[in-house]
Image (cartoon, rainbow, N blue to C red; front, side):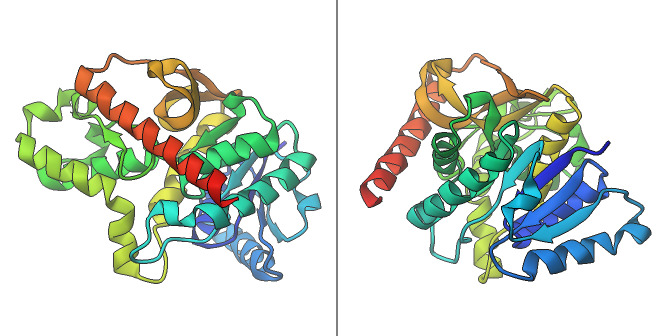
Length: 310
């Protein structure tokens, strides 16, 4: 029997996530959106690709949350996307209202589901979702580090002219300007990039990683990234649905880990059927810890901004 995944938001990120999950035969998919006809049309279009692509997952679109009943996983992509000149934090009040509404609707029908959050500003929206759902921390997880690490890996691959498959990268901290890419823990076939690239080149790639989303927004102009984000959340979904115990950087609620209390922030996490089953603590240098603390404070400030606006 197939597992069931609900994807909330039938825009570019949501629809592409539904496509990737279906084509990997990970689960049956329900695509939800308030726009009448859009999720139904995209769901039917995806289903009609099954005979060609060879997948057996069932895909359906709906605007009624009754269709999401008993989902194993709920992926939240709903919200307004960034436009040129906007930061992730500019989306805060509008997206918080959307996330609060859709999470309450989803968990009412699927109280045993795990929530994967994609909506920006990501770390703050995870907090909104945790509060709205009443779920324990292991069942509310944000997609950030997998995407940021993928961008870092892509830039390293281009710089060195080597396969991205040989590159393992780690990015900690908030999903935004204060993210903390970790060159010491980033390797090419086991070789730290600090042994392969000069410090100035690494710093330039770190800056590009931090600005990765904005770079795409400025190029597209009418929308934001969706191919890489959908790949990132699908990797996380697969780890949970298949109980892979895969260690991936995710936004999770820290309760003293890394000396940080009470905020969602990126850390290495073991993902399995129980959600965020273990938060891995690695040794940080004083400078790395300082940057991670600054990242946590940036998330706290955005939370305070949200509280002031609501």
